[in-house]
Amino acid sequence: MRSYEPNLHSLPDGSSSASRLALAAKRLGYSGIIITNHTTSGWPLGVEAARLVGGIEVAIGAEIVASDQRSLHSKATSLRDRAAFLAVHGGDEKINRAACEDPNVDLLAHPHRGRAGIGVAGAKAARDNQVAIALDLSSMIILRGPARVRWMETVRRDLNLIEKFDLPLMMTTGARSHLDLRSPRDLTALAGLLGLDRERALEALALPESILDLNRRRWTSVGVELV
Image 1 (spheres, rainbow, N blue to C red):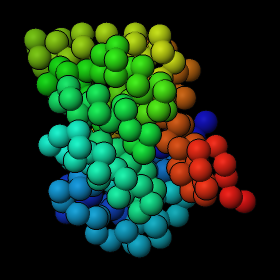
Image 2 (cartoon, rainbow, N blue to C red; image 1 turned 60 degrees about the vertical axis):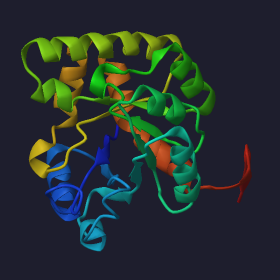
Image 3 (cartoon, helix red, strand yellow; image 1 turned 180 degrees about the horizontal axis):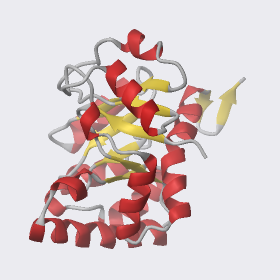
């Protein structure tokens, strides 16, 4: 099964170039990466060089940063036709909920920063709008002591909701440098510590490719494809 990293940040948003991220991800065993620089930082630099790296797909998306629900929906609508993949910068309870309610959004990124989580209402909205939830494992790698325990408690609660409502799930490190990347095998092992079984973890790593394929198809209306 092919593995994709769906939430990477390259220059000028991160500290590594797009091509450096592609080379590192390829070496770690990924089939593709999606660079989703924050909308406050601008589009990634050196994309053409990254796409010259053989053996790995490099897709360009965006991570929407919004201060309120109205701004989020406006940015998602305007970016939908320009970006191959749309994530939302989560962590705030209201933004998490608004992202789950917007069918233009592909991924709610790091919803557990600040211990907000998605909640039951957000889970139902994500199910109805097919918004994927990110299991961002960077906090598990970085945090220590009580802070990590609290984060794991929040994530485990939401993983129960994700299973209950059968929500799409993706795994990421949200890396801003090639040094922050971890292999698909490492992410699968870390997810296992949170109670996620191996098969579900592999599905989460493969899902971004399926979403990219869907986004590249042309739709004249909901459920109607132009072929």
